[in-house]
Image (cartoon, rainbow, N blue to C red):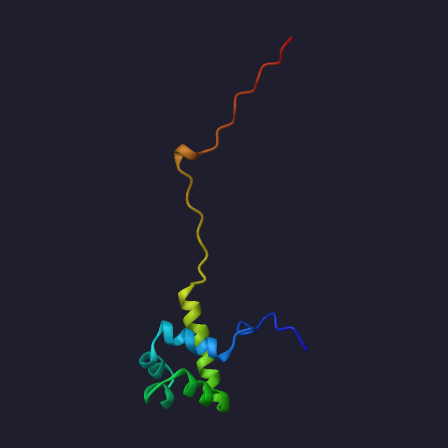
Length: 100
């Protein structure tokens, strides 16, 4: 067995993926994104899982939709450092005089 450190879907079940998409998007929007009849005609988790397990191309599209949805939820933007205000500038302390 090989480690899948670069696979973002590693450890996720198909059921978890479908349930998350239903929660975030709903059946109608899922059908708009991936044209699969099981999302449009009397949709259910059970029927969707049955179809997706038998149809590799559909499963691939649903997994891609899941990754896209999760990435857009948590954007990968780098935060720019905030400029330092005059009140927060560093000031060197006065040197202490040695005691004789």
